[in-house]
Length: 407
Image (cartoon, rainbow, N blue to C red; front, side, top):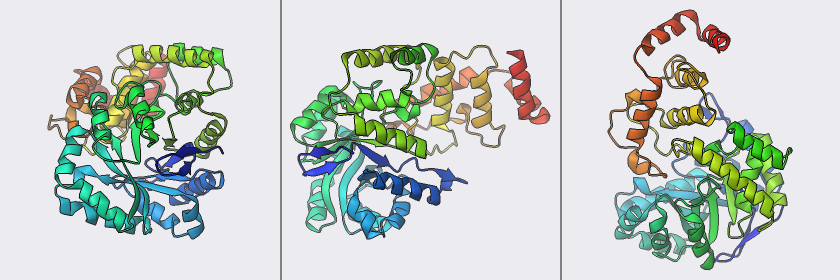
């Protein structure tokens, strides 16, 4: 595998990093056996950067079980994040770091990022002596390199970059969102400072990897029958000469092998003009179809009222991406199957009471309350309770069979 240099630190990093946010699960918990095999396979094939966070459920503890193997530890750089949302005062920071070191079973974190900050949050932390905490953690040997993951508007990005002598930054970057958050210009600015650039959401939560609108699929297939949607998206990010490492949340061997193959063959500035034009055309198609700019990252969760916010928005988007027509269509079925309570997992949009706790956590700065209201109006129309009663009494498989016949 080819590697890319972080000039600020001198580290050579694999262009694909293993994102431990979306590890495979079994019965609602990390499938440790499968996840261990995935990460071992990744390391054996040259991936040397693993990204996690305090807020990623049991991810740090799981990785700590793997990192007891000195051979594995010597081959990888570990990146985790200080949960800015949990910091109320200076005295909160070191205990959080110490807890993460215990979870990970390591003495020193290679790359420590301040998690999910915008300018307002960064200024709040600076007033609580964030710089003092960073310098002490470095001098104590608890962290090697420091950075932040950015979740704010592009207009404020450079100001956050300039507030400290950072080593790396993590930003959302994909062909659909190339001008949000950091933007192309912001990434170039970071590169001018010799900082490493870590990319999150290269597939926009899977939207750019799975099925796409028919018109978009036709554009990609016409250009190359053998290249998947995910390959196009990853190549576009890796083609940027300033990108150091793409963090990918891989939870299957197919995804892992595909991503490693793309990383191995995609050098900076290697995409042809024709391929770049193909991606641009697909982006225009997607822009015309996507209604809510949600990447299903899950930072808005958990909802105090139990709304499954990412799933609600995903299903709403899919209705328009795939042009599902009619009052009762596949998206309607998905809505009541996955969030509407038919399968016992009620998380529908109408449960939102407008408390607003999700708003400050959304990386896209979406008006989640307003977007959920759109979802509610789309799927929870008058009389739907009678349809649900029918479904519960007749059985969901039979219901789907009848709808298929009707369509």
